[in-house]
Amino acid sequence: MEWFRLCQRAIQLFDVNHARKAGDAYRHHQMNLDDWEINLESVAVLQPIADWTQHMQGTKYPTLPLVLPTVYGLIAGMAPTATLTMAFHGKPTYELAPSEMEDSVREARHAMYEDWVRIGYAVGSRS
Image 1: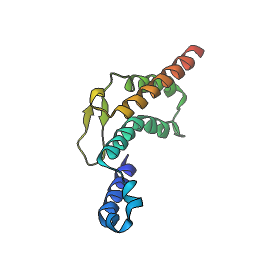
Image 2: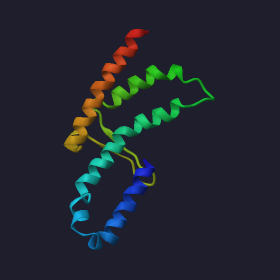
Image 3: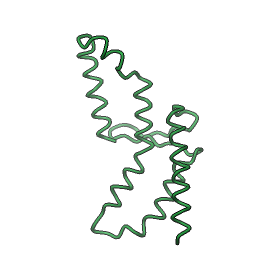
Image 4: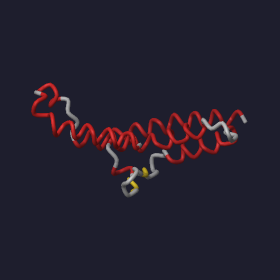
């Protein structure tokens, strides 16, 4: 998530410094505040999966026993009623209720939840 925050700041600074010189083509495709909010929430939704993926790449510890508990933890964290933790380095952590999320992010999160439920049940039924 830190990469996203650094890139966000760089793009916003570029916008401030170059938007007037860039012309209409650039201005029509410039990200507005709503776009940044959607990106921010999307990164927060995907962060637990990125963290899990990074952890599962470990070679100095066994990772197989972590699969089922982690999959079920991811499913619980993506439930339509679960709050979204917004945690960015150097910023205070806060919780975002589903009703406060952007509609497109909430819908995408719900679709991911349904996919993970299907995967979780498929993995769990094999054991």
